[in-house]
Image 1: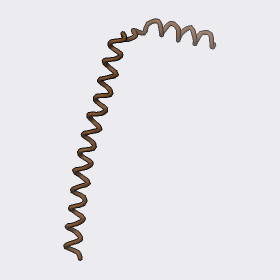
Image 2: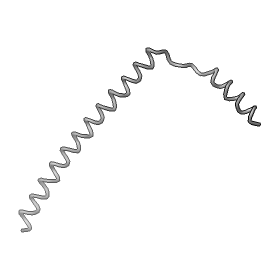
Image 3: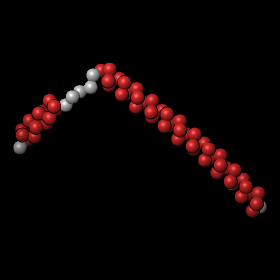
Image 4: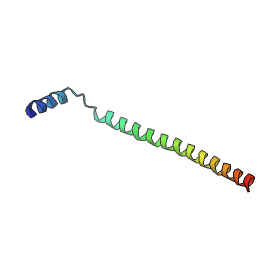
Length: 65
């Protein structure tokens, strides 16, 4: 049974179209760039929400006591 499994794995791996070195580099750079871009966007939203939260608590403190 294990021989049949490994033969199947070997046959499937022969069907795989592996990326070229340039494709791999381009895709890697793209992924890293997108991760950085989305991280900056999330950081911006976080900073805006943190600022709004601080202003809201300051407002509540002044109105309550």
